[in-house]
Amino acid sequence: MRDLELTPRLRRLADWVPPGARLADIGTDHGYLPVWLRLHGRVASAIACDLREGPLARARETGRAWGADGIDYRLGNGLAVVFPDEADAVVIAGMGGENIAAILARAPWTAGGKHTLLLQPQTRAEVLRAFLAENGYAIRREALVEDRGVLYPVMEAGGGKMSLTLGQLHGGAALLHDPLGERYIIQKIIRLQTAVAGINRSGKGLEKADRLREIITALLSMREEWRRANGS
Ligand SMILES: C[S@@+](CC[C@H](N)C(=O)[O-])C[C@H]1O[C@@H](n2cnc3c(N)ncnc32)[C@H](O)[C@@H]1O
Image (cartoon, rainbow, N blue to C red):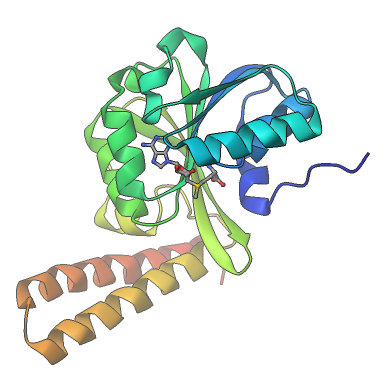
């Protein structure tokens, strides 16, 4: 039988799920991650959750088509449908950083230190990093994954303490030795420079432009740090 193939982004998340964990996949959509993990015997059980019926039905169909057992499909908002003692590992992937932060904020037990959190923001990763730093979480590791030309940050977090510099908020908490780190930082700088140029052209939001310039400066020194760390 053909193997269910994960994209590089989902494969990295799968590889970071602790072996034998009881998984909760929040915003599962097609359900590929829990189905793949069950098919490969990597997790003891999985709860696949989604806010909407359509995606949850897709997940059920993936599980049925591949004959994956041990998956409980639940309709609901974020972690509202998961009890803390039902899962050891929580994946929240493929959504905006603000949405991931809001889901964690509504489930403060995720900062209790008993759960491994695997988080993969599609946008606004800096909002998620700031939320984690300010709300009793620590990022244990972070990596960049390239998938169809796009760089995605993947984070493993848990309850703990951490403080991040402005550069780390925007350029990654722990990407100093990541081979894709410099590219990620440069992409951020270019995006911010474009935003500053837009503000300058319109003449509106000049204070915001000052803040963006501070971030650019922090990212430029982070780039230097990355280059030193990687001997380039
Ligand atoms: C783009 S898909 C990501 C699917 C998969 N996690 C991945 O990374 O490939 C985002 C999914 O998250 C779901 N979602 C968004 N907000 C949610 C929430 N608050 N609670 C549960 N699911 C949510 C959406 O319905 C959608 O199916």
